[in-house]
Length: 349
Ligand code: ATP
Image (cartoon, rainbow, N blue to C red; front, side, top):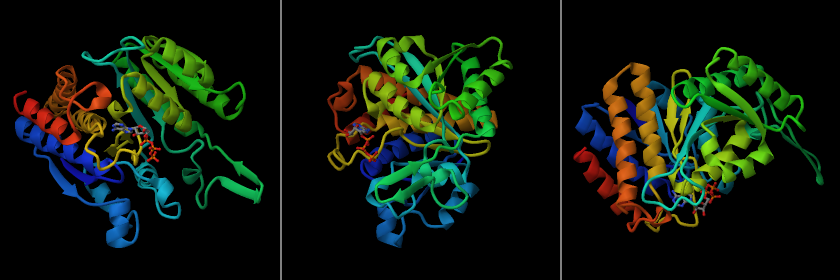
């Protein structure tokens, strides 16, 4: 399995270094033959090449089996390519799978839970991915701005199918999150298509919740949810909330998957407020690596990758229970020491 590694910005280099150690460890331990191709995107690329993403990088990633991408400080270079968008759109990674679960050894203020947010990744309110040319935000006059949101039947259908397929491997419950009460056409279509797809999965229980109500309901009873399917921006916001509810945004792993390609990338941003301090939680990027190996194992029908993926999940859980984790998850270690403890645990797995 050949993986291109782009550490990205902010805490990215610190958390990706741990994810890389973990990938190398499980590759040796489970005989996976993983090859890592280290390259740069974001600030490091700006410094070296004068652009956040070099044009040839997309082809390089297409020629590999998968990508591990760190966060992008897109705010800081508004006129440059946002690496996250570039690969999501360029590789058509339409399904952003963001699990959130509680772990033993941590305080569960909201009770124990285990859910997954399935977020559409290629259209919606994201102005940089809706148009053939230009963005979908318009400055009409200096004081008037319009933002357009694109929703297509084909994208609704494929994200719905991802959610229902996932639900079939879990507790068989899908919750559609939307704002069809106000966005009657766009979210009306999203809900209709999800309900249409649901007919192919009669064993799955389906309900739907308005996005604002969901913010209260998921805090009140996160254990009521299994798979939550939603549009791009709602999913981005909701998944930050669910990872924080699980104990820390630093536990938010995520897989960006398309028909043939996939990218592991932590759900959170570049966290510039804590960058370079050896305090960032690396588990989000590590859990993203585990998801990526799980995706590849399924695609190739190769049990070794599935075993490695599970071993990483279990080692993270054991690390948290033992306090071999960063402070945001009640641990007592820095980023590097958390990574070293995790690697040691995986070597013995
Ligand atoms: P960006 O502009 O790149 O989205 P941000 O700081 O606006 O960055 P996040 O990076 O998502 O947004 O960070 C939100 C909060 O969560 C910050 O206080 C940050 O320090 C914290 N945070 C994010 N990732 C981690 C992590 N891996 N470990 C610990 N704290 C984190």
